Amino acid sequence: MGGAFGLGKGSYLAYTTRTILDVSGKIPGASGSFRHIGTIELEVMPWEFVQPLVDDSYRLTGNESPELVNALDVMRCHGMDSDEFNRAKLDYFGEKPLFMFQWHPYGRYDVSMGFFSPGVFLRLDVIDPAFGADVGYASSLHDDDDVSDVVNVKVSPFKPGMSELISKLFRVAPSPDADASLGYFAKNIRAVRIQYVGAGLCAGLYDDGDALMGFFDLGCIPGGVSAGLRDAAIRNRDAIIQLLRTSPGLTVVISHWHNDHVNLIHALHKIDSGAELFKNGILIVPDSDAPSKLKVQSYFKTTATIHTIAHSFPGGGTHVSANVVLGKVDAYDIAKNGMNRHPHHHGLYMHITHHPSKTYALLAGDCTYSGIQKPVLDDIQNGSRCWLQASHHGGDYALAPESQTDRRLKIPKCPTISKSSAIYSANGLTYGHPDSDVMIQHIGRGWGGACILYSRITYPTILDYHMKLY
Image (cartoon, rainbow, N blue to C red):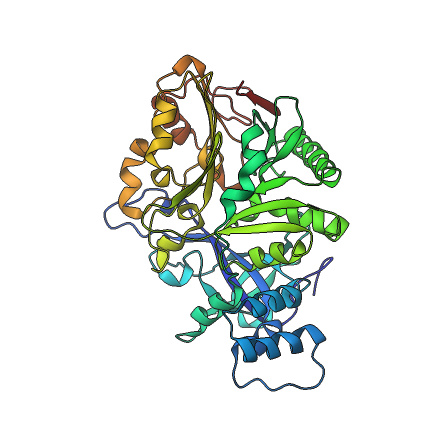
């Protein structure tokens, strides 16, 4: 183990969250092109904590923790799908170590290989440097700068059936009653405040008296092209954390489980252990088998109400309350492998309206626009003033391969050019965001007068942007 922490030699469970192409992969569909993988992001956990629950050959040694013994007993008595086991595994996995891992394959892998697609469980072995394998490094869930030394790794698929069993283990049964929890929160949202947090998203939701009601996403990656922007992101991040620590009873919507949209929750738990955090609050999250989702649910299992919105293919679904539409994107069938499991195809978005003034704010997270329901897009086209939180930090975003060539047609159209803004937070470095071509396409769809929270194009950097809908 190197650095403040690290991955020692041994075996780990790995869950792919993001595949990043190198430069040669930025021309989709080119004849004969070989779209190479530059970096693969994974969530990793020591295999020793997972094996007892999925390996029938495992035998108790007498040294297991009480939480593991209880989880095994409950699973054997009630089954892996039972409510009893859902509760037991939250207790067991809650404090188990989970890291983000950046893997840089030495070989040249084609992106069409489903082995490397998002949403797939793999085995990762940290091995001796003498083997000359691919390399990577770990970072904590709560701080992108808290990194390990580089290690040599070998990544391989599980035998048929094991990935499906592990997916079942990490998924928590959806709770379909989110409509009731929107209630007072949805009825009283009148303003949105997006602060600069580097490559991340934190959209504060306020009433007309400037009282904080909740957040849409809680992620921050400072990084970036200048020390000034980095410092600004850190200041805003710290202020948001303090606000969360002193504001019980909030409603937080998580659009999807990429760490740049959720890592402040891990940071908050690191500070306060979740004892009072979100007390009497509500978390509304999309269904996923990502281990980080199970971790978040374990933090607040006794302090907050957690609603998991189930997959609903085709077409996703909506939860409507007062002036808020909470939408679930399911652009493709989650049962299929490959790009169809990409988090951007299966996230949540929020559409906030103020009907008297016909003003609208669409918070897209990183969702592919093609999955947003038509009535929401119709609202935007008929509004007197509109704001759009641009998907994927103003960068290139994941569409199905067959849709890559008509991305421009998927961007919502807004006819009120003089009274519309497209907003995002990006640090100019992480994942290559923002992308000038993508933002020019937004402007071409009517989002002129765009307000950019970081720009390499033509607009000034703004560190704090308020949208008042009333």
